[in-house]
Length: 351
Image (tube, rainbow, N blue to C red):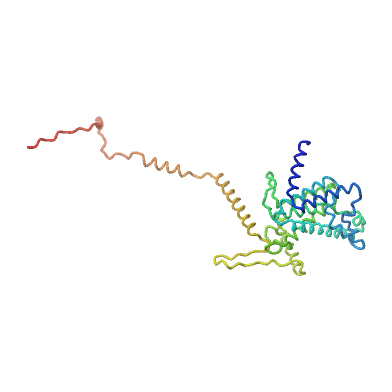
């Protein structure tokens, strides 16, 4: 353990040294607030549903609750999430877009979580849901990062045995947190933060994120139904389309815009907002690679006759001596052996 700590420190130091100002600032604030919790009560930095809404209006907690941690393992999860986002998402988006994504997810988690507990209080009239529950931590942003990784590199394999891809990680972690909650090993605000982080990040990336090709990502592999198992995708897709149609009518979401490129005489290209040609080419190459590997496995399992063996057999038949056309030798008389010597006769003399 003592030998591993210096190596881990050096590795973490190297990562932070190459990180951007946004990643360094977020990590520094997390560490500062954790150390500050030993001196003063930092509960005023977490979202408390009873204090967020009127007449108190603790609006600042929407910006601080995602950076406040109370345990060292929570600090480790928070720092790891921020560093992973900086290493994998920041090169694609930029530091400013990463900061916007962090702010959107955390503010949405705070608002949705507080509103959910307010509805729970209205149904149960239990003041615990208003003034005792505290929403804080990086689990909401962790859910957002996993959704963003599903969007950008969902085909990457996390574990080989059993095979687990990045695309299934958001719902897999949600199922794990749900089991921990049922076993009373996890508090409900943590599960709510992660769930609302998944939802808010998907809505933002699907409909509102700005980039060079417009706004949002309407690719089929990033549809809401793809987060669920294949057996549930038709039902979830139907419900999602109904909700989307309702949101379009109230002008919260926009319709899917299709662009037809008829410039090329041989084909018609249909492009959707948010679909990147490089991403499409990468997925095409991965599909071709998977198809080639599958065909190779099928060829290895099947036994096909060899063409070389057939050629050798036919060659053996051609090279075999043909039956002799000479008359058969009568019995009792041996065949005279042919002489291998060449004799010359003297030519007759001329007059």
